Amino acid sequence: MKESEIQIYFEKRIKKISNSIEFLRSKLNKLSIFRLILFTLTIISLSIIYIYKLNSNYYYFSIITFTAFVILFIIYNKKNYFLERLKSYKKVLEQELNRFNLKLDEFYDYEIKFNKYKKDFNNARDLGLLGKKGLLTYLDISFSLQGEENLYNSILGNISYSEKEIKDRQNLISELEQKKNRVLKLIRIFQEREIDLEQKGKLDFNFLENYDATKKLIPKWLFYKTFLFLIWFSFPILFLLNLPNFLMSGIIINTILFYVFKKKNEKLYKQIFKISSSISPISKLSNFLIGFKYSKINSKLSKKESKKIFKILENIFNKLTVQNSPLIHYLLNSLFLWDLWQLESYQNWRKKFQEHLSDLSKVLKEIDSILSLANFKFLNPDYEFPNVSETQKSISADSISHPLIPKQNRVSNPLKISKLGDSLIITGSNMSGKTTYLRTIGLNFLLANIGSVVAAKDLKLPPIEILTSIKNEDSLEEGISFFYSEVKRIGEILKISKSNIPKLILLDELLKGTNTRERLIASKTILIELAKTNSFIYITTHDIDLAKKTTKQRLAYFQEKVENKQMSFDYKIQDGIIKSTNALKILELENIGLNFKIKI
Image 1 (cartoon, helix red, strand yellow):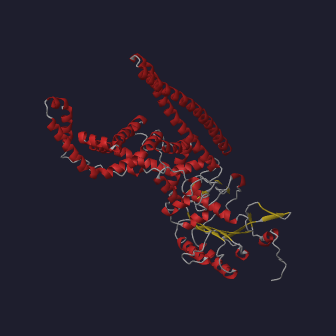
Image 2 (cartoon, helix red, strand yellow):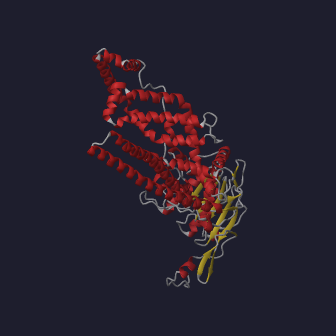
Image 3 (cartoon, helix red, strand yellow):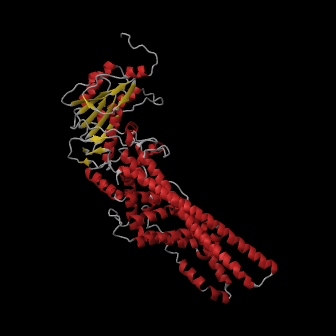
């Protein structure tokens, strides 16, 4: 599917589903009226029969109307459930259409969760990873806590991938995205959890693995089950023989055992009920992934066998829900030790299928960790996988653009340096695109590092560590000034850059928190030191004196145009050095009444 077709695809699907929703609503309204009529007829007919003491044959009419009412009731519930599923799918499509158009204002603000995974706040802040319009908000469609954690840790640099791991991730993304409905189907399965269980939030796959099968729920010495079965099997005989005391003894023993094991198993009850909300979507996900080439569970189970596994568990859960009715719960345990039987069934289920569950958990975690990137590729079919190689000693791209700028406003630029140790000094006008260029490179290299497609043509690079100093801020709480916070960050970059791992270093307005003379001296010294490292260095500056072309340094600039007292930018990077600045022009255009012809 081409990029130009994505919008049309979503709009057509949304329109089709909207029409189906309206049709179903109309049908459900009619069914509601018929149900009401049938129920009313049943009540009226029964009342007439009772008041006039009519022959019992007249009850047939009431039975027919009531039976028809029950049938309509079942049909109504099924159609209403289907309606809810359609509404859920429509919501998914509308959400992804907004994501495609970068309308992220209604999405969750992922900055709230950031502290859970925090490692390098500078990169997150500098590259625009957080907030309602950040990369994480755009990407994250993970449906599990583990998938979310992996996505965050990947993007924030807490996980480093080798060339092989990056290529494996690229292959998995390609397979997930190969069919246009595959990613949407996975999102839809998760969304439907809200219909089935009225629960929101992400799934937790850990329960599939975290289980001690050696722990006995019922001690070996308790052979009471067999004894109990014999008692109740022979109940008619015991009753005829007038042995009620013997029966009462069995009930008393059951009651004692019920209370002995109650406290011990309460914790397990809570765990079981907690995971019960995850079973339906996990079962659907498991069935969906069988036949998936990548899936490690592909060769072990058929869809029928997979359904059977979770059907058994659902039956156990349903039997345990009797705890919601205290009186019935007590009677069943006094008569049959109901809970212990169900808990033993659960333990036997875990023992029998634990290997499969552990494999399933690993597959689901890996699929979920990559799903956001597969969706990113689906929404951006023109994006390409970069060539990431550990033998690569240079970087190159025919063009590169910012993935979070709407496509109609996006401008592509080439990479301007290639060799390790090289630096590009970028001068230019205010608002002309210098900082955006740094972020463009940083975001695309970050995406390349985690196996994603990139907003670049023919991008080649090694697995690379990204170091940034773009949006430094002072801190009132820590008493750190703007200049000192910048110096602190530069010190960290100089220290980290000494390792042999290739680095991408992005510095915006180097040491802008101090005076021009000292800034120039310090900046030149920093550049000399960075040139000795395994780094590709990009620096923006207003200090034209810093821009001296050498064998290790290249020069580029961005510039504005002023026509008819209107300023415009083409955001295109050009070779060389800026020959004019626009600070005074901006002030003049604002017409704030200042005289700029004074001598200094």
